Length: 198
Image 1 (cartoon, one colour):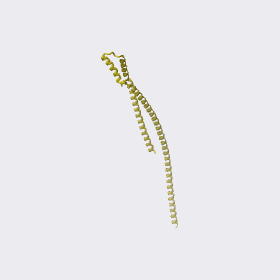
Image 2 (cartoon, rainbow, N blue to C red):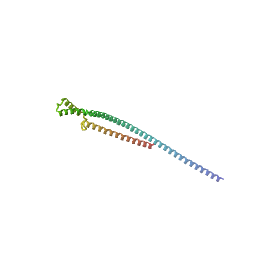
Image 3 (cartoon, rainbow, N blue to C red):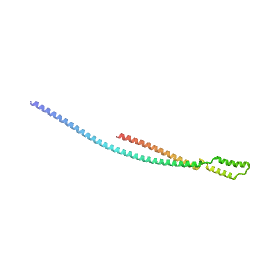
Image 4 (cartoon, rainbow, N blue to C red):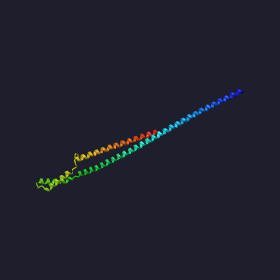
C-alpha cells in the first residue's frame, strides 16, 4: 500500500510539473507574441507617420507646381493676347495703308485728256494749255496714287515686322504647348507615385 501511494504521489507530482512547465511555455509564448505585436504596432505607427509626411510633402509639391504652372500659363496667355492685339493693330494699319495706296483714278479720264491733245496736235490746231495742264495734273495724280512697289522701304519694313511677329507668336505657342505637355506628364507621374505610395 505504501509503495502504491508513493507511486501515485510521484505521478501526481510529475503531472503537476508537466502542467506547470506547459503553462510556463504558453506564458512565454504569449509574452513573445505580445512583444511582437507591440513591436509591429510601433513599426506600423512609424510607417504611417512617414507616409503621412510623404503625402503632405507631395501634396505641397503638387500644389506649388500647379500654382507655378497657373502663373506661367497666365503670363504666357497675357503675352499671347498682347502679341495678337499688336498683330491686329498692325494688320489694320497695313490694310489702311494698302487701301490708301490702292486708290487710283479711272484710266478713261486720263486717256480722253491725252487723246484731245494728240488730236489737236495731229490736225495742226493750237494745243489748249488747259488740256495740257489738266493732263499733266492727272498724270501726276495717277502716278502718286499707284500702290507702293513691293521693294519700297515702307512695305519691306511692314512685311518684315509682320513676319517677325508671326514667328514670335508661333514660338510662343510652341513653348506654351510644350509646357502644358510637360505639366500633364508631371501631374501623371505625381499621381502614379502617390498611388503606389498608398
